[in-house]
Length: 326
Image (cartoon, rainbow, N blue to C red; front, top):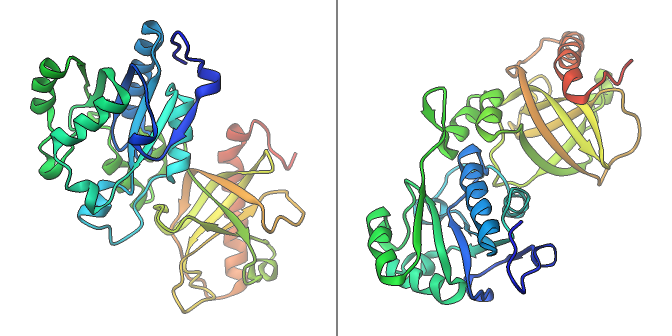
């Protein structure tokens, strides 16, 4: 964490909801959407944080919610990679001292690049501004790299442009992560993120059909705007009550039973017994085991779930550190 005379980072780690709610005499500043906080975002934040620490300045991450694309173009399906609070916590954990999640609406989208920069300089007084190569801001995306390069001479800040991170010869991006999740490739998504893709939610009562099959499941009610991986069965770890459990998770419409095509997310926790309704859970997606299937009978489904559990155990033993069934 960065430090500055009169600046105590352990006491000043904070989140703000508006640029105007923060006032700093000097700072270092990273600006971006940071959805997912993937490897590229992490590289930018860590480099900025290292400089901030050496300069004894607070490291500020400025991001936006809703996502500008969601406001300006509209998203027809859930597309966020993480909720804004989880994003802020992640940014803080990798080096930011302050996270400002600026509300982005149609009124804010009409602000010119010059007006936005004036607002940032008035309240945050950055000595350095850190961005990725493709970052733009302001009405009509006029605040591009060339604009900031010219502005640094006028306003006296130093612009730091961080090149993208490549994985398998392609740029790491939130768009690439969304594409991998929509195809069910959670392993690639995890490599791009530097950690397994995670979905948090609340355990709520379900239909009870899992008990009938012999594999009780916990229904997960997650944030409706977060992107879920493609329909299918996944090996996951589940964090509940500060403990980690192996789990087989099904995402889909339960075609063997249901005909209303309502999407659900259900987790069978391996070797777990107890009542956990109302508990929070964090699912980390490790591997896709198979696509969703319709079975001719409950017995066929039961036999397939046995195979899924066996495969999940083999996949997750290394993740958990031990096999909970042993």
